[in-house]
Length: 154
Length: 203
Image (cartoon, rainbow over all chains, first blue to last red; front, side):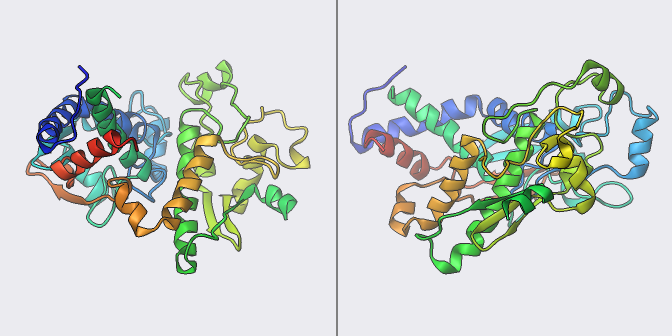
């Protein structure tokens, strides 16, 4: 429902929690679409500067080609085997912070520890000192702005 | 120069950096280069061309069934060698984007049809590097300009546009073994309040 706004602090104080609540209601779905569906699932890292995920090792590619992993293809490198890892995506609010993550422990292996014998890292989220791709971050800002506009009736 | 770049499966994107402080020029070029590479990869993942006026024909059913498990999305990826060779380097006037590995240039030309050698190519043209008289699609060109503008902006202008590109991220591992990040201050009263005020003020 659109709200008429007067430029006083009281109105602003009322509007802020409304925007926050409305954004969070669909944050998991919307941010999941940005990070999981449109980025990781097509073989790209959501981390600024990482580009495409590193290719699978030759031995893993051979195993895929031999049909050892049913339904798995050698490209794109989308970190999907059973789907459990990507399905573990979540978002939540923690005070003023928006927390985004993957509950599955493989996320830490791919991102921080490195997977397989060669310990190859495929970053699913930024580590300390890194950031999300600017396009993803700006789209998250746009999602909040959309809620502002909706509530203001703009 | 243009023909040479087409032979190399590359394109130079010239940047007007006249309003950007000189000590920031290499930073702008680096950010623009990475942005274009990421944008090309995003478009290709969707089976779309990043080049203005170009589009991709779906893979043939026969080819898709044989090599791609029936998926007809033309993402130019079979084993990943071609797109792994996509990169950028800084040039005098901007950035050069394209294939950086000699071994992948013939394959790239088979898709781009940029040289005379590809005139008789049997594979359909799926151009992912613009020719000398072409540009990237409008959203990519706009993104490039936004990056240049952000480096040209004064601190006062940056203060009026809070949030965008100013990420404050902290990363952590969770007890169950997963991983998460916190986008700090994104949902703070100040951040949301400023967005509301900007709209009320018509910005």
